Structure formats: C-alpha cells, structure tokens
Length: 452
Image (tube, rainbow, N blue to C red; front, side, top):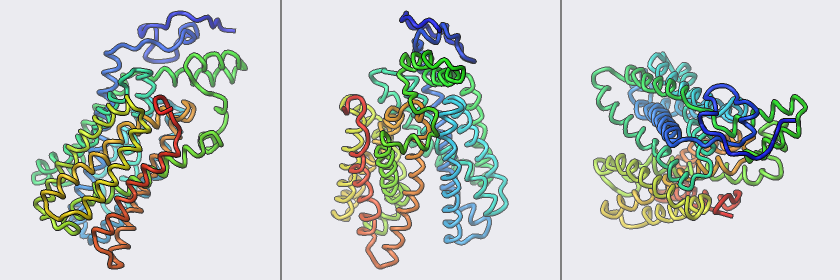
C-alpha cells in the first residue's frame, strides 16, 4: 500500500503541468498554487468566455443580414434560429461527460475551439440546413461558462474571495456582447457578414493555444487516479486519496446522469434546472427582446431604447461584481435567491409603473442588474454544490435548460400577444413572473458553505 502519512503539501514545482504526478507527490495532498498560476488561469478563462459569448451574440446580431442575403422572411429566419437553439441544446449535453471523464482543461480547450470553428464555418454556409448544422456546434461554446465554473472552482480551492474572483470571469458576457456589437459596426460595411464571422475565428484560436499551457485542476487529477487505483484493486488507497482531496467517490462507478437523479442529489438537480428555465424566460423577454418590450409596452422611442444595449451590458457587468462580492460574504445561494426575487419585483414595477423614459429606463437598468448579476455566484455555486465526480454533468444538466427557457419565454409571449393581451401584461407573465419563480425554486437547492 502507498504510504499515506500526512506531510507538507507539495509545491507547484513538484506538480507537473503534463501527465500524472507520482503517487508520492499525489498522496501529499493538493499542491499550493502560485498567484501567477491563479491569475493566468483566470485571465485565460475570462478570454475564453469573452470569445465564446462573442460568437453566440454575433449570430443573433447578424441574423437579419444573413436572412436578407438568403432572401428569408422574418418568420422563416426566426424558425431557423429556433432550430439552431434545439441543435445547441443537444450538442451541449456532451459537455458534462467531457468534464467528468476527460478533464477540466481538455473541456476548456474543446469548447473554445468549438467557438472558433463555429465562427469560421458560419462564414461559409450556403443555406438554412448548413447554418443550423454549423451553429448547433455553438452549444459547446455556450457551455464554456460551465467549464469555467467547474475548473476555477477547483483551482481556487478555499480562497476566501473566490466568488468575487470568478465574477470577473463571468463578466466576460457583457464584454463579449459589446465587442460583437463594436466589430459588427466596424467590419460589416466593408467586409460583409461572412467575413465578420471568419475574422472572429482567430482570437479564439489564440485562446486555445494559451489554454493548452494551463494546468489540469488537482482535484480532477486525483479523481482520475482514484479511478485507476480502483481498477488496480487498490480500494483503500483510492479512498485515502479521495479523502485528501475532499472527493466523494462512493457512486463514481455509476453513470453521471443516474447519480444526479439519485435521492441525495435529485431535488437539487430538479430545482437548479427549474431555476435556469424560469430565469431564462426573463432573460429572453427583458434582455434579448428588451427593445421590443420598451417600445411596444412602455412607449419608449426606438432611439431611446437603443440606450438599452449599453445599459444592459453596463448593468450586467456591475451586477456580476456586486453579486460575486456579496456571495462571498452571505453565501452564494442566499445571494442568488435574493437577487432574482428582487429583480422580478423591480421588473414588475417597471412594467406597470409610469410610461415616462425617466422612470422606465433607470428601473429597467436596475432590473437587469438583479437579473444578470446573480449569474456570477450561480455558476460558481453550481461547481461547488455537486460532488467532483459529477461536477460536469450536474451543472451542465441545469445549464442546458437555459435555451429551453428562452424558447418557452418567446412562445408564451407570442401566444399572449396573439390572444390580444397587452405587451405589458404579456411581458409580466412571460418574463417578470419567470424571474420571480427562479428565485423561489432556488429554495429547493442544496445549502453549501456560508448558506448552511
């Protein structure tokens, strides 16, 4: 049996960047990672998320131009977009097993490379079928934030401000969205929509190269070794190693899907998935379709509504940092519940309050602050609320419900409007109510850390 005496944790230098550490090093416990390593990993994950978002937002931004080029009607273009969403849903299901069986670092490289590939190939499509096929791969890029949450959760360890650190990474969403808008305005008039997508490939390729130089997370390396030890019949060594790294390997022999719906995790998985679904109804109504709601529902002029593009991203950026900071102090689960519940109330007040821009736009920005901001603690919370053995499958199962919520929100809004319901009431039912419910169903999730 391998010696298992407790000794000083190994330094980063003793932990190889590639390959498995020797058992002598591995059984000394997790290495002490340097600030440089932590900072480099954070920056690469931030950039990977920025360019994954860039690709996702670029498609939505340029869809009218694509439709115009192919001669599609608006109705046909939105149908294509719906099928793209369905495709991304099925493709993104593969990210969880990739994380849990292949590794956190490989998953980062694959998802970022997928964003680069999707961008490049989108510039070469020749119709609806090829566009749906190519854009379905963007489901991997969309799931890059799950990879970040799992990977960085394990790299940060018990660092006191880990949630606030992660909030900077998650703020890559508004940064990526702003870059997509900026580059579209600069490049589209001169190069056309195809080259805007093709040129987006190159920054993502750089991130893939940088990602290849990162370390695998120590907990996953240990998890991988426990699996090897079990195959060798060294169950006592596997249990000892798992204990040193805080790993629960009791059900590791079962499929990930079976584990997350086992009695100990079932209610947590269902509640978290429902929270994503309901909240993305709010995302779809107030973020994606925000200008429509403001102009048709609140009488705000279109020129004023364009300010929303800036407000949404600015509010989201500040919201990420605020909620990430608060989550470190009062608990991430508590922060998420409070943020989304308050956000739902604010959006309701905005919808049924005065129709003046002076009231609507500040209230709308504040609503976005509480709608988008909790995603910083949420993603990090998901990584720490599941055992390492299903830390990929669990969060990803909830994460993929986001696009489903977006489709449901759009469908419900359309159905209500078609039935003659006013835009304000329709937005309340399809969006604000969904936001509020997302906070309520979070009460069914597990308590972790300061939430206990």
